[in-house]
Amino acid sequence: MAPQRVLVTGAAGFIGNAFLRRLLAERPGVAAMTFDALTYAGHEENLADLPGAERHQFVRGDVAVAADVERALAGFQPDAVVHFAAETHVDRSILQPEPFLRTNILGTQVLLDACREAGIRLVCISTDEVYGSLAAPRRAAPDHPLAPSNVYAATKAAGDLLAQAAFRTHGQDVLVTRSTNNYGPRQMPEKLIPLMILRAHAGESLPVYGHGLQERDWLHVDDHSDGILAALERGQAGATYHFGGGQGRTNLAMVEALLAACGRDGARIEHVRDRPGHDQRYALDDGATREELGWTPVKALEEGLAETIAWYLGHADWCRAVAGDDLRAFLEANYGDR
Ligand code: NAD
Ligand code: TYD
Image 1: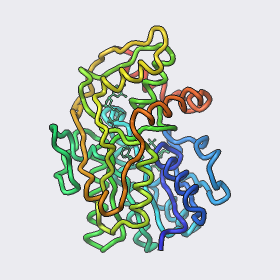
Image 2: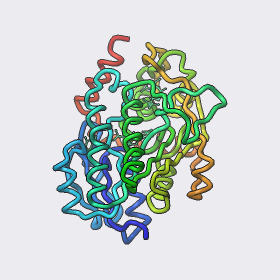
Image 3: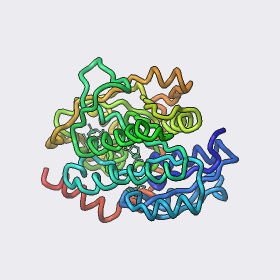
């Protein structure tokens, strides 16, 4: 039977929030709890206008603190946990690794232990970045060797391996999902697409790292959420599922498209110092997942981007609210000297 009480970690952030909205809207019998530490990337604003809000509750807690997790599980009594909470920005992981090790590795182990103790399913949300850079036309299938290039990717790979170890050691009901780059509403404007939309609209320079010919495969966050829901309800314990957008673009092509769509006077592309260890290309082979879960992405990139641009430009209050001092300091540290 599909889970009826679902605890979602990290649902005050980008993808967890989209998933939470999907879950509440499409499963009217489901009750959900958001468990989130509200780091710089988590925003209570994202929990303000939820569909089925009467079936949702929020608790503030840290996945790396066992007592926080155990208290939430004991209070809410979920029959499954979907684990999005993470430190997620590659550039930050290069500057300051420690929170990535703590949340992405220790936090995942804390959840594994607590869910095993409670006898409930845990779905761990991971990323194509664990495979490192792939030369075209290769695509990574779930058994492809892990070769992470930066602290973010390495800590996500560690979390994935801990989940696989829990399955092998204890036969735990845990599964891993990996997706390509997501885009859509409510993504922190430190990530490529919202950053470029807001800077283009403000008539500022658009900082493209290095030559800009690195390729990312873009998946709309609602398509990703549908895949995760299918994995939660129908996935097999111990499995790893892949969700790809099948819509690879170079960063330069993406930024040029965003500039053309929303650039104001003064907005222009500026090639800046490259990210150290910058992965050239990510790509997933998601054929087995599509077949097993019956999942397929439906949002065409051009349509999804137009909607995403309209969302950011129509939510100036949200953008102001999330762009706190921390984000300003980060942007200044990264772009200020270039
Ligand atoms: P995000 O940075 O937008 O949100 C992360 C959320 O986790 C925030 O709400 C934050 O407050 C919360 N959080 C951070 N540390 C926490 C802690 N110690 N305890 C509790 N909550 C904590 O991230 P996102 O882009 O939505 O990514 C969600 C998940 O999806 C991550 O696991 C990420 O690795 C994975 N993923 C992201 C992408 C992408 O393109 N963004 C692609 C593939 C996989
Ligand atoms: P990002 O959104 O940080 O996602 P990820 O590193 O997880 O793929 O970056 C997407 C791509 O865009 C990546 O190749 C780095 C590049 N990039 C820029 O060129 N300029 C920027 O200002 C940012 C934030 C990213």
